[in-house]
Length: 110
Image (tube, rainbow, N blue to C red):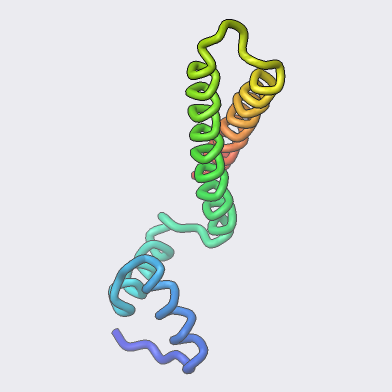
């Protein structure tokens, strides 16, 4: 099969292929087959990108929570400060919200 693309169209495809670490032809073949077989629905592309961002943010917040837990443990002088406790609670709450959002997005995807 041969397809013709303008220079601008080719650049879009080549950039997307590089982002997936695929040769341009391999990327184009995967894209065509995914759409033709119904495995990929373009309307979900933005939702998938959003999910990836949410999952990355959740991981960052988890690392913050771990750092706060370690800081609290290192105080080791009885009751941790009220400020440190508030930070830890805020991080835990943010993780729960991000996890809930990620679950919601996953349920909306096919």
